[in-house]
Every structure is written in C-alpha cells, then in structure tokens.
Image (cartoon, rainbow, N blue to C red; front, side):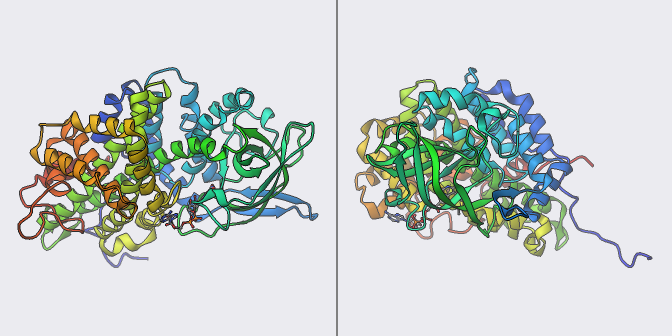
Length: 550
Ligand SMILES: Cc1cc2nc3c(=O)[nH]c(=O)nc-3n(C[C@H](O)[C@H](O)[C@H](O)COP(=O)(O)OP(=O)(O)OC[C@H]3O[C@@H](n4cnc5c(N)ncnc54)[C@H](O)[C@@H]3O)c2cc1C
C-alpha cells in the first residue's frame, strides 16, 4: 500500500530513558542516607524506562488476572491466573528487594534505598506494587509473634519470586497480604464479624467469615482481623497449610475495578480457616496498625511515582509538539501548567523520601524520628493522595485528545490516581488520624514543629505560613481535620523545598501554596497552571523533561 500521508508533529515514543534521572529523588536518596544505592537505582530506572518494561505494564493491565474457582472435575481450587507479564514485573520487584528485604539489611538507609526502588520501578506498573508493599508492611506487625516472625521473616525477605500455592515453609520466597475490610465496614474495622475460635490443644484458631476486599490473593500469608473471645484480634493465615492441604480460604470473585487492573482484589470467605494469633487477643487494631502504617508510606511513594510519570509524559509531549508555530512547552501558559505540575510532583517526592528516611531511622530506634513520622505521614498521606487525581487529569490534558487515548499511558495513570487515597485510611480517616496524633501525643507535635523550625529564617513566606499553622492548630475541631491536615502537609513540603530543593521550585512552591496575599485575588488559583508571573518555569520544567536516546 502506498503511503497516503506523512505523520508529523507527534512526539517520539517515550521509551529508552532513565526513570531515575530525577534530581529531586536522587538528592533525597543521598540526603536520607542511601547514596550507596544510587548505581542500583539507576539500573532499575533504565529498566523501568525500557520498551520491554513498558510493554509488561501494558500487557499486565490489558490481560488482567482471572479467577479459577474450580478445576475441571469440580474441586475447588481458588486460584488466580496471571499474564506472564505480571510475573516478569514481580520477578524484577522481588529480585531487587522492593518487598521485605530491608528488614534483613543492616545498612543504614536500607529502607530509603527500597523506597527509591519502589518509586522508580512503580513507573512500569502500579498494580503489582500492591503485593510488594503488603509484604514489606507485614514484618513489623508479624514481629508481635516472635515464633512466627522467626519462621517466616527470612522467607518474606528472600529475593526470590516463587509463585504458586505450596506450603510456605517449602517455598524459596513468600508474599503477604492483608484481610481487614468487610462488607459492613472498612474504616471502622471494629465492626468486623469474622469469628476466631480457639482450636483446642492445637494452639491455633479457626476463622469463619467474609472479607469484602483482600488484594493479591495468590499470596502465601495474610494478616487477618477477626473477633476472638478476648475481642478483635490479629491473625496470620496461610493459604496452604504446612501439610500441603489448602486452607479454608475461598475466593468468591475478583473485583471489577476502575484501575489497578493488573492486580487481583478478591472477595473472600473464610471457612474454619486455620490461623495463628499475632499479638495479644483483643489488641488486633494496635497490632495491624503497624502494617497499615508501612503501607501508608507506600501510598505516598506510589502517588509520587504517578505524579512524576504524569508530568514527565506531559513535559515530553509539550517539548515536541507544536501549535500556533511554537512548541507547546514554550507557550507561556503551557509552561505555567507544566511548572505547576512539576512542583507538585517534586514536593510530593521530597516529602515521601523524608518519610522514608524517618522510617529507616525509626526502625533503628530513633524516637524523635518516629514521633515526626507519626504526624507527618498521616497529614502527607491525606494531602498528597488527595492531589493525585487532579494532577493526573491536568497532565493528561497537556496531551490534548491524545492523552484521552489508552495507548498514551495517561488513562492508566488517571484511573490509578484515586486509589491511594482510598487505601489505608480514606481521605477523612487519614485527616482525622493526623488530628488524633496532633492532639493526643504532644511529643509528636513537638517533633513536627522541630522539623519545620530547621527551615526558619530562610524564606519569609514560609516563616509566616509556620506562624499561621500554629494558630490554626489551636482549634483542632473534627470538622476542620482536612483543612488542618492540608495545611500541615503543605508547610512541611514548603520547609523541605526551602531547605533542600532547587531554588526555582522552592520559590514557585512558596509563592503559590504558601502565599498569603490578602489584597484582591490570591496569587494562586485552584487549578494547576495559575502560578504567579515571575516564576522561572523553564528551569522547573527542564527538571521534568526526560532525555531520550534519539
Ligand atoms: C482496589 C482496592 C483494593 C483493596 N485491597 C484491600 C485489601 O487487600 N485488604 C483490605 O483489608 N482492604 C482492601 N481494600 C479496602 C479499603 O482499604 C477500604 O475500601 C477502605 O479502607 C475504606 O473502607 P470502606 O470501603 O468500607 O469505606 P467506609 O469505611 O464505609 O468509608 C466510606 C467513606 O466514609 C469516610 N469515613 C469513614 N469514617 C469516617 C468518619 N469517622 N468521619 C468522616 N468520614 C468517615 C471514609 O473516609 C470514606 O470516604 C481495598 C480497596 C480497594 C478499592
């Protein structure tokens, strides 16, 4: 067939670039004590930006998991089948220790290095990061049962992806999940009705009940909440029992989800399923919250990944597409939009890595960092995740109609964007948690303000914002929780940028998010692309524009 027309004014495919070529992330990696991991992160970044990994991400989402409840003879098997691309993604993630590996790594900064890997590799596909995150998160909770931790932690931390339902003790590596949410309540887990009956003499419990959401059901071990005689308690439940028989865990169906389509999320019925108590009876929430607190960090990291991917795609498109005789990136209003998206992304990345650093130091016994993390994580989880859908929508629009088309990659980012805010404490719950930490634990507020204090004097807008925040926090009414969590998160992001960020990014952030104009219209509007005029947009957008091999 002869060509009928020439294709022009379309950007080159964005593949073959280094996802880790990201100054905000690399500076944070070094600052938070994991500079030693830079070469490995770069290598992973190049893989994440390769055509091969992009294709795995696409295939794993287009050919989502399929539930097989029975074999051909009618026996229940409760298995989930995945496309080979899913297994490729999981093999890389586990092989690079993005799951529980840092818990067995003595090097200071191990959790930061893992955070960087998670952030970079998540660009290939968000869905498979769910079981990776839950495996990372289970360890602190599991340590409430020393014998179980002794048995399973080495296998959870092992860097081998060993798919398939076999007794956990016989596998080369294990994956974990979390099973809390029931039909009648996800936020209010105390409303759980799943029953846990002690099995006489055997030392375990039998769990019966339903769970409305349990993701990654092909995992090996699940942390489950159930009502024991002593109250709501936390249990470790294996998919396959040590003798090789399947545990009483029936997968009823998989959710047909908005996004996150590569990952399986199941409805589960437990039918006298064998489980081991973790922590004390009646202290289930206190125990499992340690797992939730780790996955919350990954919600922030995953959000930062999505924002970076969105602004990178948008900046790449605008650098190559011409309209009205000028590159889109050179049009002042588009430069404003891109810069606004870029500073949101950098601010989220910096907060995520500060929290990863706090996680690392807290895990090594630093009480001040644990106190800072308690409040900063709740507020940042609320605000960063809340910003994600608007950010994804605006990044998508930078590509015009092309952005609305599946193969641009933007629709996948857009569908994924609301999820991190729902997970692990939906918006209101996260904001209320920040308020609870603020009002009930004085040492937490002190640690938070000590962090902000380190930036004092460097930028008068930030100084005024810190003073305003102190005043605002004197009225911690429940209905103000979102307002206060947002303010805390913004001031923290501003403080980090003023101390460590690129000057143009810090200036744009404080001028917009922390501006305190009282006359006329505020300096910053509600949509992206409303930065004040004098901002150095070229310097900011340049940091988000990927270099590709031509
Ligand atoms: C794709 C996906 C995968 C999931 N995977 C898992 C999993 O693996 N394991 C698991 O256990 N769960 C999982 N979940 C469930 C998820 O954690 C819950 O959906 C979430 O915690 C919210 O619970 P809910 O859906 O019952 O909503 P509800 O608790 O009914 O909340 C509804 C709304 O009310 C708000 N709200 C609740 N309490 C208050 C309050 N006191 N004041 C003001 N507002 C309030 C919430 O913020 C929310 O906006 C998954 C969910 C999704 C979408």
